[in-house]
Amino acid sequence: MKRFLSALLIVGSTSAWSQSLPFDFESATSGMAGYDNASFTIVNNPSTTGNSSSKVAEIVKTTAGDLWAGGKITNVSSLDFSSASSSVLSMKVYTTEPVGTVIKVKLENPYTSEVDAVTEVSGAWHTLTFDFGIPLPSGSADLVIMPQPFTAGGGNTFYVDDIQQVPGTVLPQRAGLPITFESGTTTGHFFSFESATMEVVANSKLDATNSSQTVGKIVRYLGAPYGGSVITFANNIDFANHPQITMKVWTSAPVGTDVTLKAEKPFWGEERSVQTTKTEEWELLTFDFTNAPTDMPSLVLMFDFVTGSSNVGDGTATSTFFFDEIKFANVPLGADEIGELGQMDVYPNPASDRWTLSLNDGQIFQVQIVNMEGRVVEVIEGEGARALKIDATTFASGVYTAKINTSRGQDVVRLVKH
Ligand SMILES: [Ca+2]
Ligand SMILES: [Ca+2]
Image (cartoon, rainbow, N blue to C red; front, side):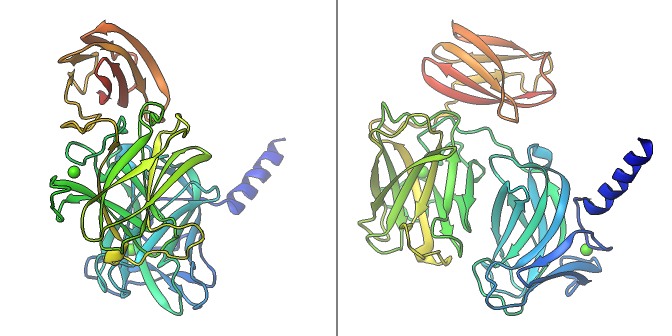
């Protein structure tokens, strides 16, 4: 039996050799393989500006017809993006392809996630970060690097180095609508897909329809026709009481461009599309979700998406969309976004023995405490009190999200246990 076991171990260690981050390519790196006729090899560093190391990895998209060619490192173990200390993948990139070139990173086999970043310089090393968003992948997978997806190869060359996990922000989910970008909703609350990027930016398009300070911006680069960005709320979107959503949009794309909101839950989505009636002006668009299911927590934004279209975006002004004040049509816009009510004080935070939640005004009905994996670990009845003490001694050190039902609505706060 013992001999059989050791034979198995030998087989296991040769056929399923695993690699772990970081990768600096200074020595031979197992599991590197080009696909779709691309090469993926270790070479001398072509430029030491911004990267003084001697060896880097080179991907050459050799064949013009292979639009999706790239390189992968198979069986990378111990990938864990679920904690703030390692929630972002960072990679140095060098290419002489133009600024705005998309670099896609995919975790597959098993497929868990993919995310794109866009180059900011040409002909110099710089660091791109890949935030895998929610759900936070972990485990073992093939790490696929797909430079310039949806673009003919024919010799286009990319260098990568220092692939590692770095600290990022793991944000608690927003409680729900509205989203105004004026009090807490950030880029990190959104997950962008298919070569779209989403940023929270200053409103550079101030006019009578939207004079607010801050807005969201989505740019579609070469990807799929359905490139966009999604936000997942702590609560389901309450279409029973609020069947219509409004959103302000500004774009240089022509009048008649489709704007799509899709409410989503796993394996189900409801899409509503309307068309712009203005260009280079803010306008208010209304999306009617009457009779939509009421158990969907995610809202997907897709611009210029028409089913069957091959329009994939190109990073120009007509692929750029500003949006703001996503709200229920029948709820007036308050000063604050939900989740940043500012009515809930938590102290001390971080805590080692107890947190006190205190509401300035109103009653606490129930508190649900959710761990980083999204599991409810405790439910505390508030019984209508204005303040509530929560025993922290039974919690493992880490970050938790408290979802609080109050007489003023829902609030979400982050609790940190020392
Ligand atoms: Ca190196
Ligand atoms: Ca705003």
